[in-house]
Length: 68
Image 1 (cartoon, rainbow, N blue to C red):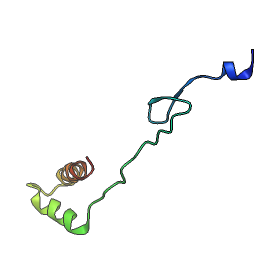
Image 2: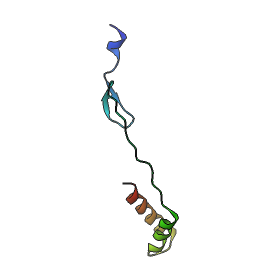
Image 3: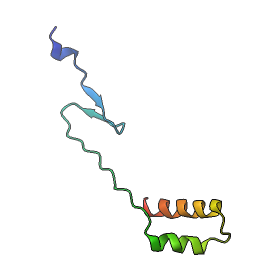
Image 4: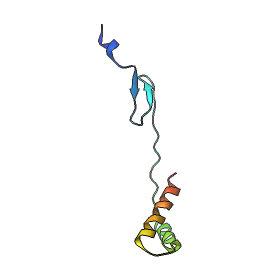
């Protein structure tokens, strides 16, 4: 038996996809989009209560909106 017969024919990529060894699969990852200073100010003034918790929740929602 040669070493070639012992090599796996299926490879698990870093993104969790199963690919044949000879597949040329490239996983595209979108770049992260942050908030501008104006967007942070807009989020701050849109908060009903100006507390750190509500501000953090509003920032999180805005970032999810921009990055999905």
